[in-house]
Image (cartoon, rainbow, N blue to C red; front, side, top):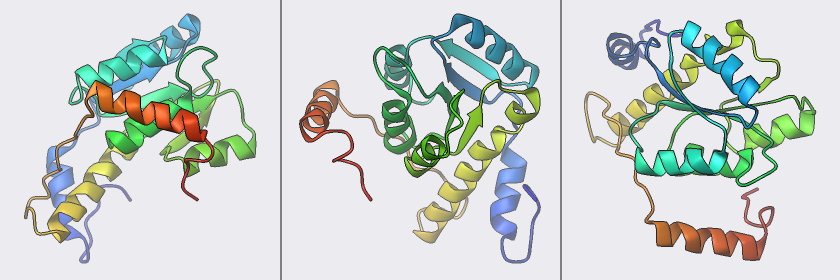
Length: 192
């Protein structure tokens, strides 16, 4: 059960229980459909989250670069015909920025779901999204904070489980990285 303390893990739960609340969690939401964006935004607001909606993944990436500390989670549509798709956004937000990313799509194909999860998605939700699903996405942020706290404590960096600061790449380094990935091909550059 989330938030319960046990003999083996009393310290981690105590820290997280005292400092974490899902109300006010900051979610960056991306969906190119303005209709879906409005519906999902309303559902998230009803769950008590703070929502920043974006219709373009490229704008979301710029938002993350400019304000790396402004979000607790990214919730993104997988398929975007123009610009950055959900897999690239997943790489940037999930791996590079260490943010929990929940992917959603109307595509419920098992291979697609597995590819997203193997690429680092915390969860995969099938459209239409429902209030019951969205009210529990805070658990991914909670687990990430617990995991990062355990890592820091195990490394001896902090007895209180401080989370390391996110780092961002300079624009030139990011452009160089993207250029190399495009030369190699996206599937070639993925770890097995």
